Image (cartoon, rainbow, N blue to C red; front, side, top):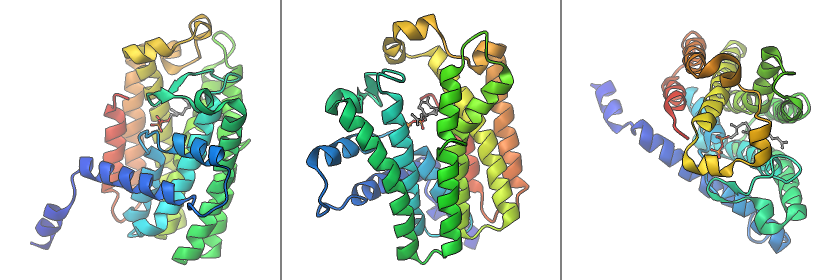
Length: 307
Ligand code: GRG
């Protein structure tokens, strides 16, 4: 009877996704209080990209992982915002002329197209540094232990830096068809994409009080989920809707990036996404996590996503 009532009150996955994304969007705007003396153009530029939407996947993972252990959403939110700030900074910098040279992101003009390259670079820098401020503040406000906070800060710096996302991006920039092998491709996917996903799960788990073996299960879940996510991203890019095709530059066409579909073809890539998702879910199911239902739903949702 109790279970049935609990089930009845449980938001659908769609409601959970939308509710979490809204909570993250509101919390993001609160990370830079209006009475802080910040140059207007910098504040606007950061806000422009933070408010531009996106799936809010990484914050969702922080929150769902914390909740899987009975952790509070309030304590997880500032850390969820922190990882979205790091993600947003990486997108702003990735879009710059010196990198991907993109004019549009999330259906809007890219940051540098609106605010100029110098401000876009600095907005990215400020978002990256503010992420660490948010993590430490969250700890103070919500009584997260210093040990937990140190681990979160340590993992955020490692997984977003030279041994993480930035390292993956540099490897990706040097990867060209003909000279990159599938092993290097896995390195690129693991660091450019999976590391922030792994970080999000570990941080949520730590906030919820996960023990070392449960953290290991979250790490394995995040690794496979992150690899599947990137292959799916490359598949979606290749299938391309009209807007994506329109976004391609001449140099993209001449020098297509190395991807799983390039190496093993579309059909096998789709199978690989499914295989990795199954393996991710297995790690979670076997990991002794008190309530992994939302994380499992997220894995299924990502496998079926179309954007
Ligand atoms: C420039 C330091 C630096 C790093 C760039 C993240 C990244 C590394 C580049 C962005 C380009 C890209 C395709 C990265 C792979 C990870 C990925 C699929 C990012 C897009 O994440 P989504 O789909 O984006 O979660 P939204 O817009 O939904 O937040």
